[in-house]
Image (tube, rainbow, N blue to C red; front, side, top):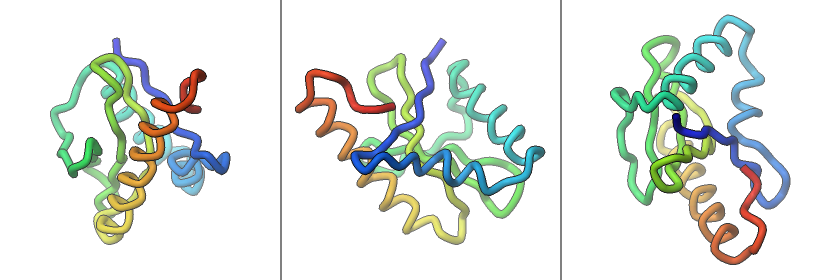
Length: 114
């Protein structure tokens, strides 16, 4: 089983949770199921986006994507979410958050908030 965490940036923001909270319960449930499958090790619909960030593409809605990084083989860190239309901006944000995560993990005796 893979541990799935949500990243809280150095300003205390959880970009993934903010994105998720904008949806109704039905969509959140479908997204939560996809994240659960990640935790089970199902990476079949994952695409690498570079710099250690990957996107989990969801097969409903306007091309929903969940951006995450893998910290070793047993931890997935959820960074942000988005849609196909905003993909470039969303990937840029996810890469910035992943870079921050790695720097905070390397520099702090207490692991970054995730």
